[in-house]
Image (cartoon, rainbow, N blue to C red; front, side):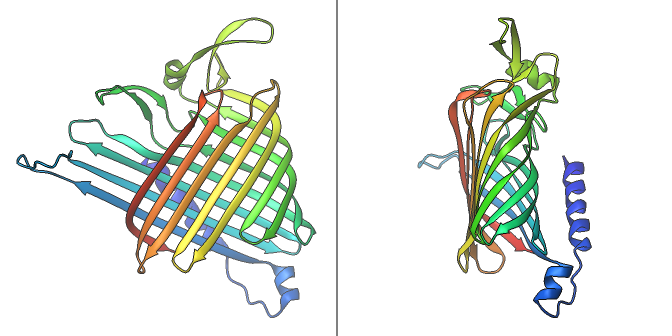
Length: 306
């Protein structure tokens, strides 16, 4: 995992370094040469509590550590806008006597090129990836760790599409990908074995699948329609709200219920280097479980804007 973080960090540094500043004398120069808008946020959050043997108020010794990294780089040139968005969240906690477990784990990357059709409407082509960094496990009622049920690229969701987007203001975008291809990847055989479910194919054949990926394969290709709503704005000088909603409706090779994915991050700055973060992740994917999955967290710690 340290190697992965190092590769990602060096890639971002190299990408930022390549976006050199240019001297723009007027609007015509700006549109011809192009310019970059960049925003990078790094946060480390920690919480801890401990109690001695004579403490009568109740409580369990515990600690939690979380990391958050966001990098947004936008290239403007002529009628075109090239957007690159990276969002990483990872955190874990441990209570006395229990195994270490994740509190949040999200890897998201998106690249998109859009060109203006009118002042508020663009056509776009883009791709995004959603996965996680570390292994996830089943936990029993007594808190002991069970089987591994997820890991990096098990599962992962890669989507590519073209469509139309509506952008009435700088901080909000609503897009519809009329032709979207999505790949579901399960690249870990142990995860597949521990999460497999019985499924019946169209021809009546019974087999097993993990996250929708059939036995003997590591990839599921689906064709569908994707809608995305994204919001990113400083509500006040010290409060930023970022949220993203993504819906995907598969109609080939099989018609399926709509998948929903929600991510929200609210960051409040306290002074120059400290922050409070509220995060929320919501998922509905019938290939995983036919229930709405929800995770939320509140943390405080060190932050740096680059």
